[in-house]
Image (cartoon, rainbow, N blue to C red; front, side, top):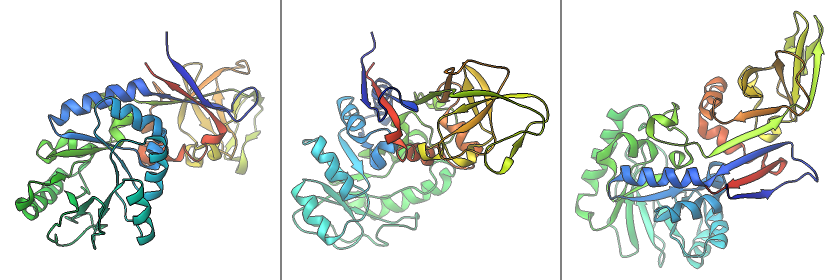
Length: 351
């Protein structure tokens, strides 16, 4: 029997949609990726509320599956996570202000720094080897509070040649500091660049069963953690010349059945997903007309019953396919689901 927990619902009787987070799948992904890491520590990146999946639940599950630390982007994220998880290492990957350093120290967070090293708090020095973003252009000599050295790949998902250049620069700059924890690889680096695994890998998108390469996650042994379901709230027939949605972007050329799904861009189903495919009663159907704030229309083969299930994300409709249609990446779509999370019921599966 499945172990299921309903996280929250904001409607008295039924939610507009339901997002299922399969923590069992996340556990299996972490176990698989830890095996790929071949002895390097796996640090689970749970920034942006675990890419929209839920930071505390995903972080706790990742730790139970073998992750040895959690990574966030901001001190604020770290403080919120510390309230939920009092024990594990939490590493703040992004910059922090002077005021936040004191808060981080009190919460036993570790900081990544690209300049001055604050006292009495564990820090990781970041070297910019080609990302052109945060990071020192030249490594300063680490002092007693430095526990790690790191850099960040710019192209591990699509240009391994440049990733190897970055790795070479990092290894040369840190050669005399092998007593410190050196960490470079992200999800793509872990999966494609074995020599970059070093002491620890910072694994984000892959632990959620999403491909850093925008391909089928199964190609890398990954199992998607998130699925998203709704239903047909209304079914109607358009006559020739009738339109659906704002701007009349879809005009029926013949009698056409459409269903209205009570999910829109305020829920995280983006406006530029018009024309993508969802599953209606298990069959692929095209989204037509303009996706609005609270609803979208889908073309039907006939007069299906109101309440017919609709799969927005899941087997047969991976997030990667929606991302390709929208001209973006699965990272962006996943994190935007958090924007509409209060409008959806969240269900956690543990098996």
